[in-house]
Length: 181
Image 1 (cartoon, helix red, strand yellow):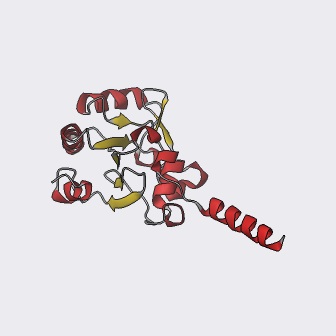
Image 2 (cartoon, one colour):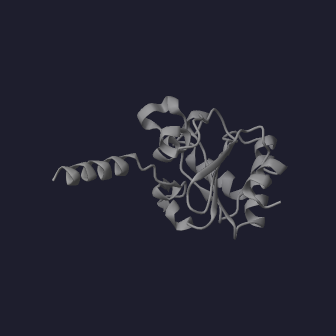
Image 3 (tube, rainbow, N blue to C red):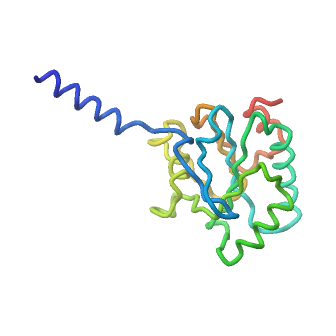
């Protein structure tokens, strides 16, 4: 009987410490509805925090993101995220959605505004909580502090890389990380 009880506690411990994958999450879409990331099992997923300000630098960033996503849409799924901490507002949602859609193809997921930073506490979206907490994703302990962060997940949903905004979407580091050089 004692052996059975020890085995039971071991099973409970491991199920509690299971960290999951990106496929366990869903995101709200800027146009309404939600998208389960489990739909992209087998594909690499690139999650990018988006600029909110509409200017030439942001246009260039979005153009590069669209070019990358379109050229490799059979291999990767791009999920783009405007952040409340960077200035996303519900009042500006429609105008922002229109601007993003003039720059980004329909196969790129654009989420509704999300809280992306640890400083948001309990408001931080669960996906970003998982991606930024080493205790949950078992790899990275990092915080988002602006647009241009890039999180990479393998086809099995495990996080394998994070690049800061200094790494350009069109740069070699992003292509090398995605394995698409």
